[in-house]
Image (tube, rainbow, N blue to C red; front, top):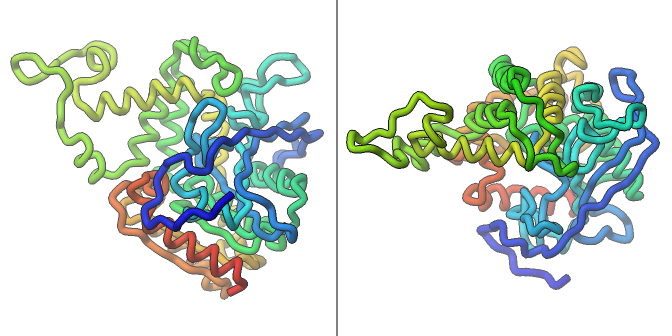
Length: 395
């Protein structure tokens, strides 16, 4: 693949080209709860080429609703969720690095999760799927990396829930990670974060209509329940910032009557909402219903809520004591879900243990989702490109 010129402004252009999701099978895994889950399927994609020394592998870790399709164009014509960052000449340059991304355990995009068939019943697991932890997700990824013949990763990179996994990788597998990039993440979820997740799950629990599994099972088109849509709307509000919402929507209205409003007490405000922000959230919720599974949402948000390194190890300093990786922690000034104070707690604990850690707070207005917004890519691209370059050169 020819080397493309480095762009200061990376965007989602599909320049990597066509990609195909692959699947690998394992007998199973014993979860941290002690429950054995098997057989186990893991969906993953790779980009670039593994070097003869197998020393250029970068593992990408997706957020709550992400999947294995991180870059390029898949069989359905979809752009990868981080296509702006991964590709020739981009922040994670596929002319230099072998990039791996897998769908997490309990997901609904190919990796074993609630929509998968339970061999004991011949039916989808649904809510009988065992609860999993962030650690379980990382252990499954480690199995995949080992199956690919890679003994040590150059870097693990993730944002939000992916950032939790990037942190856990450095703690859990210190000898298998040279560096880790933790973006917009936390070592333990705040009570506010737990509260938002709880309200979202309750929207699903309270839904009178039981929906069929989504994801690759193809059941999404017939879904009638709206609990998952409401949960997504609640979550999506936390991913944005007040500045973004004001700039994008303000108090703009959709169709109005002669009095300037389209007032209704009916469902969805009388057809999709009266204000533009309501219409936007309705679209986000409705589209999410078509591509995600409600039981995966329940189990994954539970895993996020349970993630608490301080509780697991006694202190953050104790958790980080054996880390060998170079660490880069990135936060966003407008992120009120996982604010900079949470990133600084990680950084200070790493510094207390005299670890190699760098920290950057990016002044971006896009909220928690700043790492996924194309407009936020230029500074993030420069930082990640520079960090990977230093790690690969052995600095």
